[in-house]
Image (cartoon, rainbow, N blue to C red; front, side, top):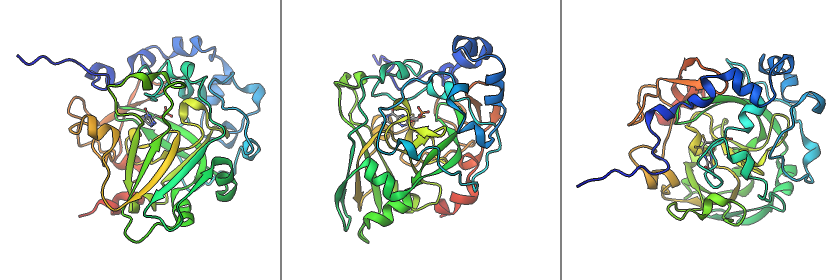
Length: 328
Ligand code: MTE
């Protein structure tokens, strides 16, 4: 007899949209101490001040990393080339609703469990088919690359979404710095491996550490962004401090957090989720409202903090930048 035992990643359809926070948004905001004018003004839009509010206006944030040699570089100048079509997500909501399975499969517990996670000192090793293999200290790399802020939409494969001011540098600029060999066709990225700091990594039914991959053409696309900051300050631990990838036209699981190694390869690498459930989480993961997930529709999404479904856009609204990458 075939018995289906549900694994952690196999969420039922009713959980694909997180009802717990959408259904009663006001109650949720109250729980966070976020009702009233300051919240309304934070939710009101994507004006410049949203990313660089004075600390007096902000609710206390959890998951802030230890101060670093580059803390003073935030907030960075915004690159206005990527305007949003929707309001920015309230920072406190985004900070308390995270997919970071190294800590927990419960999104609302991650921000509470990240405290022991040390984000400095932090090295990133660059290996494989690259002319200059080397190891960077993250602060040295940030100084070398410079920082800019971008407002991007983020669409999770589970049909929730947010709009966030990320700070970082283009992946292309990093690739130009390390000079891959002509034979390099893919980049593979790997997350830290420290079960003593990340309690979820003690669950050995998963092939830790988390790993992801993309093509060199995707890496060279202007939207591909290495992120070290959020909402005008350094990246919080639950969002993937000290450095993560952001590919806004793909489902969020491609945007690997807390990267320690980048490899250049001539073959397409397996990825964490495509290895576990290939039918549900493929290598490409381009946002497409017309291709349903095997267990739920991808036609619409719910923004964090809202109960209203909104239509999902092809390539998450970034077709003008990326559609050419996938034309046969
Ligand atoms: N990176 C690592 N290392 N571990 C993870 O569990 N989750 C992914 C992605 N990057 C994940 C990860 C998924 S499924 C999503 S939707 C986003 O991170 C969530 O990012 P956020 O918590 O900053 O919103």
